[in-house]
Length: 301
Image 1: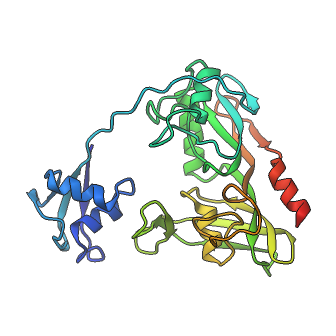
Image 2: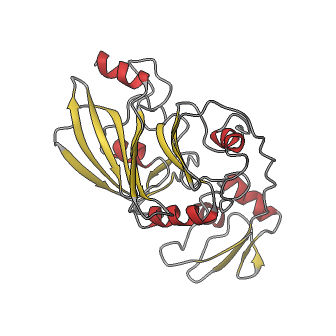
Image 3: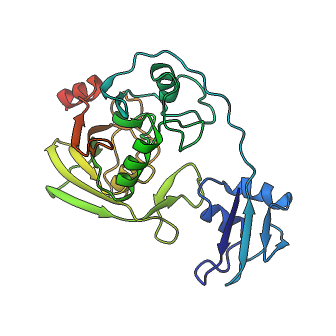
């Protein structure tokens, strides 16, 4: 797969490996350095070394080898199905389940279960590793997720996501007591410049991200909130709440290392999802009940 970039005045002066890693979110800096060694990165149609400094107007070409995706096995699972018809299926995803196969997780993912349940009748727009998947939620985030059974439905739901018309409301518990009853975080999110496994508020290379939040209940040291996504960037709620110094309880990536409770990852639940049905044009809204661990935590607080 070939990707091309033109260096602007803002991007000038960066090392070529740094510039490409920033421009291609899916590539780590070490991966870019390997591509440079194999002459898969060209600057003005010439090979360069990793320490080359970019100049305004540089034309950069990156040839990313196609990844051979492993065949996905259909695995029977006890899926918590909220709704299903010939076009879509709404799933209440449990904590600890990965949505689709990726490095280190090629079995027992939601897609493996869907392949069995839907007998392979899933949209193919996102490739063979992500059949039916239009959007994702993190492994340790619970809640409602929409999956498409055909390409027509997939295009419709994807367009609604692009236009920010899908209703997505989450519930979370965060560190600290939020003073205001509601607020909005409007801050661009992109890859962390050093730790490529993390996201961060990135004014220079991030994409616009907007999260609206409101307080549901205050506790002595924590706050129970609802978040409404206007955009859908990777780790958006986790990054935005950490940015305003109220990281999610249990989030070891963006929050404190120590947690006063025994938790498996962040306390975040995708409670509500509303969309226009791709076939009927009817607005439909579904809710996933709070998982037991979340309810028990609220009782303790």
